[in-house]
Structure formats: structure tokens, C-alpha cells
Image (cartoon, rainbow, N blue to C red; front, side):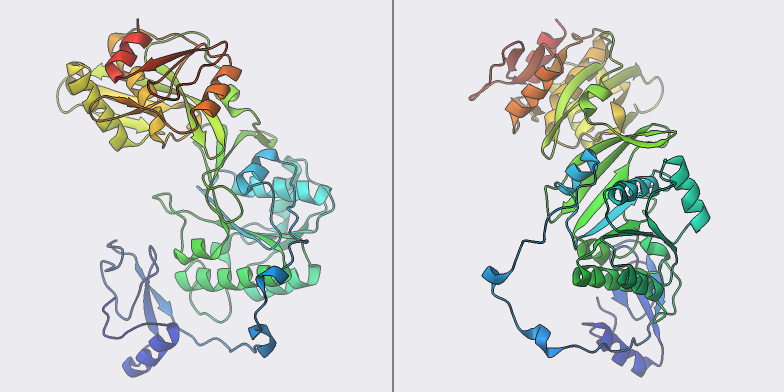
Length: 468
């Protein structure tokens, strides 16, 4: 970043500041880039109005032991004490890769009011019930408010140690005193250290507090959960270095008006990424959904135009999701395209393929609305064929069979391509009673007893077979 000085480190910046006789540092809230002067647009990430002022203060130097500089042979590193902690919540343990790893740091983000505190307090109660020492640090609620939340969840008598505090130094001392197995900090944005004069939630405070808590977790072998706020765009607030510091990043998401909640991992050093856990918010708190495919499809009673089921693979879990499409003449003006749970650009491509390759020319003058039910985001191309059939079904007002499913990627020429792990997807569809499944024709086509597998080469052929 060209700012008049080479800012290789914070010490280099302080030296530069002594020449300018100022103690202000401007940091980008989006990417963490630094500048010695305010800029309207960040030269690093290109975002506007993201540079905020941070006051630079020199922190006291720590004493280091030279014994720590002695390296250890890889074969001498012991793994005997890395037994994962099982929470008793199968969906939560699945997303983490099989349980909580001692000494790991997990960042949990989500929209305000989505249920992050409810989820972690429930996990804390489950761990305390099996004898684990859990410290719940509440920076946004008082002890009384936390107690009221615990009472609603049926955890009024849980052996959870509570601390209502935002001062980092006090939190660190409490963690050392109680020797907790698991620490939950709710949230990292309200923590502050006395060595920085900026307000809580600023770039410097979030970075400094997170670094100190992560260092303590690694030294004491304590599992640490950090609750993070998100921006209006849905990204985790604070510097990007916050996500690099932690071992696992979890996103708790869902429609506020819907009872479905989805816990998704985007980073996991101890398990598969993009793993998914499904929960249902009730008046008594969160309830895990162990069979989400059956839960999402429980309301399907009869075939209707514009509906088709696909099998999405979320890390190691096959998930059956219903895709619904609605088309309507747009009248005056440009036709509208709206999506919920699907990529907008992917929908635009499928509409162009249906119009040019499958003969649906009327789509150019129709509004198109497509959504995936249950709040599940269909991000992989395996849902292309189901989306195309659902749109064609809505245009022709002709439903497919109730027990039909479609799995396949659609190319720009209209050809249907196969996707990975097709056997695992077919077994899940068969388990839930589906009778037909449309797949890409080609080598390695599987046959399933009790379910008809229909190979198709082109999206035009798939639409004709599904709506015949």
C-alpha cells in the first residue's frame, strides 16, 4: 500500500509516526490494510469508506524463555491427549468433524438474533452435564439475563461457570484460575484491552483480544469458542486476520421467520469443510434435526407444477431439497428474476439454455422466481437439472411425479453432465422412497433396486421425460 512509508510491521509504523508527530493509523475494516492517512477508497480491496482511525500505543514487552526456542522432533510429539470432546449433539459434532478438539479455537458467526448464544449455551449445558468444566463469558448480557436464557432452555441447574466481563485482562485471569476445559466468549467484538485506547469492536481491539485469547487457548490446551458479529453483507465483522487466527469458522444461518437453522463450516483444520448441521428453533430452544432430508420433504403431499427434488451433497452428507419455480408474464418493463437459496448468475445461465437450447422462447417475457425450501443454499451445479425441470414445469403448468428427483449439471449447449458421488446421492433418494431419478447418461451409470434410474443426454430430453 503506497502511503509514503513502507509499513512492514507495527514497529515500522511507530517509527514513521514519530517523524509525522501523530499517533493515528487508518485500518481497512474489510481487509485490514493500513495507511498513514485517511483514504476514501481502500487501495487493497477497493471498498469505499472502510478505513477507520486507530490509535497506536506501545504495549509492554513480554518476557520470553530461551528454552522455548528448542525444536521438537515430529516423531516425539504425543497425540495421546487429543481425544475429542463429544457434546452429545450429533449435528454439532458432525460439523466440527467428530467433536471438540482440546486447544482448538472456533469462531461462530451469524445474523443478530439467529440463535448463536442459544446454541452455545445449550452446548455448554450438554458439556457440563458430563462433568466438563465450562466457562461462559458473557460480554453482552448480565448474569441475570444469561440465567433467564438458561432457564428457558431447561439449564437453570447446569454446572456452568458464568462471567459477565468485557475486560480482556480479567477474562484471561479467570480462564487461568478455573482451568476450564471449554471457554465460550460471547462476543469477541465487545472485548477490550487496556493497552489500546480505541473503542471496543474496532479493528485493533478485535485483533489484539483475539490474538491473546488464541495464544492462551493453545498454551492451556483449552477449547475456545468465539462469537463474532457479521456485517450487513453477511461477512464476519472485524479484520480478515480473525478468520486466519482460528482453527474453525462456523456460520449459523437461517431465515428469521423460519424455524430452520443451519450450522455450516467454511474452514476446519480438524475435519471436512462445508459440513452442515440442521437445527429447528422451538419455544424451548434449539432441537437438532437428525434426518433433515425427511424433515424438509415432510410437507410434500401431492405433485404440483414448478416443483422438483434434487440431492445436494454437503461435505459428507447427502441432502434432499425441493426446488420450486414460478413463472408469470411480466407485462410492461423488463422481466424480473429472483432467487432464494440459489446463485442468481447460475439461474440466468439456465434460463438462457432453456430459451435457446430447449425451445422455451416465452421465458424472455416472463418473470421467474426460484427458491430452495428449508433455507438450504444450493451452491453446487448438481442442482442445475432440477432447477431447469422445475422452471419448465411451471411454464407448461404440468407437474412431474411426486416421487421424482433430478441430479445433474447442465452445460451451455444443454447437455447434462454427471456429478461426483452419484451412488451416495441415489442411496439417500431411495431411502426416502423416491421412485425415479434423472441422471446424466454415460459410463458408470448405476442401477438401484426399487428405483428407476433414467439416463438423459440433453436438458430437452430430461424435460420431456419428466413432464410426459
